Length: 46
Length: 152
Image (cartoon, one colour):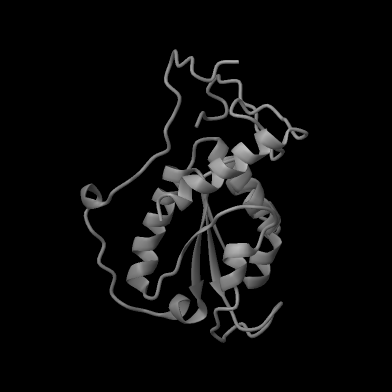
């Protein structure tokens, strides 16, 4: 996770986004990948 | 901060700036920050939120113990999300689980909730604090120089 102010170009959004942080709110496949990844990173470690 | 919404906003901003950030509140304040918890989950912002529960809804009974926020800790914000919630039952666990909460937040890049209650908050007991070198500290992964994997 880059730190703001260290020289990285950072994109942050609460919208549905792909692995590069780019918004893809109209694509259900991107949304599914995102939701599954965000949930699975903890669910798999229960 | 002027209110809980500002507090959680400051926590998210501090985390983006590289700090390990935490805020503490009670039931009504926990309700106020729910939307931002969802935002922190979606933006994968590591942070810790302490909720010291009280009896009843709203201002309720300030000096009475209850666990009414139990479901809110898991289902409080909207959308599909998973929550990590830790529940201390002693002063010692308040100490150890706070460290664990920060570690889990950094490891999984997600908000972690420390769910205490009025009784635990008012307890007084001896706490064993281990030497710093014996405490496991997890810090978020940072990008490496020249890392091209996610270059746009």
